[in-house]
Length: 287
Image 1 (cartoon, rainbow, N blue to C red):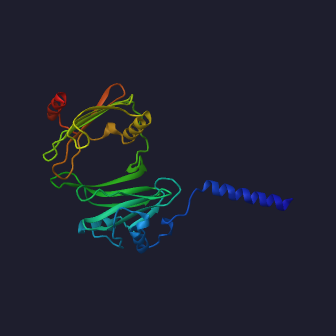
Image 2 (cartoon, rainbow, N blue to C red):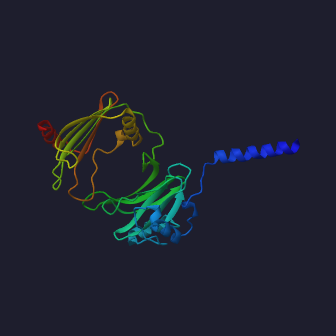
Image 3 (spheres, one colour):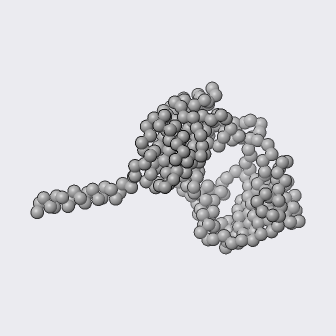
């Protein structure tokens, strides 16, 4: 009887252990060297859509090399379960013809999903990633504008809403009533569009040769589930406290205006200087 009880207790302990530990061994778990990571990236069966040359050291310029050394980066690849599905994912930095690129690869069970993490030379002079648990400590030298001004930033990134975004440990809960976005075109891009999304799911799209659909006014209905996703994202990125204007370090980018109406008819605007407002509004009145 005592022996049977011991076996039952042992069986219970194993069952409890495996029920709490959802970790499943996968291909990424077996990678232990830069050479093995390179072979994993190059294997056509894995369908990784980016090519990187993974070495012990990356080809940074002198300024970025000093930053990399200060961060004490041990290797150019790290593992973690970023999307919390019990499968190990991969973060890897390597050389490409334009410089250095960082990508992440998620194991989705039946396939691998690969995406960019670094933004590229139009947005960043260089960037560095350190895995902390299932999050990423992201260091970058941002290009702020076309005049070449740069700033070094550090962000804590978390995988959420299908991408890595800046972590917000205490997101607010605003009642989003309406979302409006419209473009003002650019020197090269002459198209315009305006889109409005109301909290009841009504969508209005006004297009003037935007390259997606024929010019005209269109209406549609957004499901409450999709609208909820948009609201959750806006609240998570703390839209109320974002800067009023952002710019990129290259020319001929389309200017985009975003307006969010929330709570007791509060309005938060982004993107277009006040002196442009009337001109853009008149355009859409004509449409």
